[in-house]
Image (cartoon, rainbow, N blue to C red):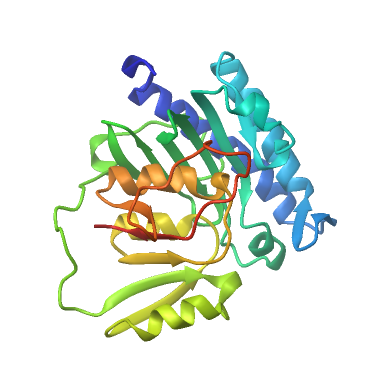
Length: 270
């Protein structure tokens, strides 16, 4: 993709789209809503669909030449997807289970993929008015952003300085894990071989953002995730100096196969 396409103005526009989608999500969140199942253990709500439609229409108006792929449009066949070099990869409501529980731990995720890697990512957590944005060669930004914000702009004060350390220190390892998989047996085995650590739990892609901020050191994941779950957070973490790697140590890729399921991975700020 032409590097001139990825600029601060585009990042701001995607941030504004995420905020508008967050506004629609919060309208549903504040009232009673129906819950359906797309498939077993995969709930969906009106908020998922409303956010999907807002983001899809907004991105198509912004860059109509770039294909759009979302959790709510996962019916697009591999024969079509495998031809894509650049495409939007979106989770319109990441953490639907947390949304249903009303614990606030859900996000709106928007990523731009180019040649199998995310080159732009936005994660918006509307309940805490916090937005994370990153783009290749532009860095990572963190900013307060309420759902009522209609004129979203970035400034140098909101830019995160990338970490320079190349290994963990002797302090306790701060581990973040998925709230939905507290009883994960693989996770329990992995923890047994670690030295001293603190373990906390969270829902949605906010975990990648906490690692990017340095509020956690590492996020190991041994349960299945889909590519739209990780792409935006992947870009944010990478621009903050970290990465997401499979258990062989290779950076995870996108749109390389029919399945959209990621390999098991370790997300780290180093």
